[in-house]
Image (cartoon, rainbow, N blue to C red; front, top):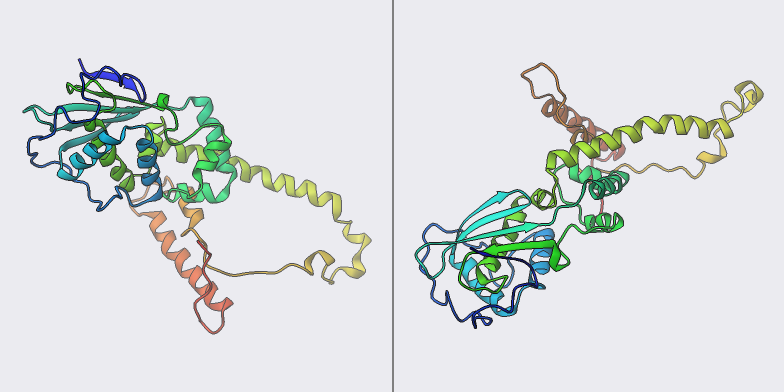
Length: 309
């Protein structure tokens, strides 16, 4: 039976191997394993993958981190597959048969996800970036506003298991799997959400539904607002062609959007009985129209200013 525990548990019954100098000091040479791409001390490129590594390193003893890095760079992790709320890996140690490792993350409840999606949908930039398949830079703040965390912050957030003889948990095989998993997040940021219990499709559908409901309410709210301030037309005919005082401070700035085609990304591919890729055709048309609008706005055809990152 493999050992199974949340981080911080089960680390005292380890048969004298707390320093990582017992089993696996000279692991068998692995063939066809997954070698870490990163060089130096960095094991991830994007901020969300680095954030995962940082969270893990706060929960794992230093000695096992060092062995885990070595295993990851040498390709000792033979495979890494996604399972429900986690991943399963085969890690080659000192024995002929690879060890089996599982890492699971505590999923958020339906009520917690509802709060998260409400916050994300309420912030247009978050919704636009997620619908475009991008990871928003400040998405952790949205989760915090909903009272939860996207990344592991406490021992109870992660459950790990390895069938190696080292009874300390996490062991070096678990640590190696963590590093390879961090690089997997670079390629697939939505894997983080799946580990927390929601697929990319479910998140995007939830955002579209909330944004759609919000858009339907806006015209009614605007009509109610205007009814309080706009006088009847026949009562103010002599000033009909004059610019109202409210427009004197109104200015227009034309610039390329921070997100490429945010409305199309938000709406997705329309469900039409046709072989044509309607979204792709619309993207070409929107690109041409947007470029022409920028050229008209900047009559000298110079490059328009870009939004700051």
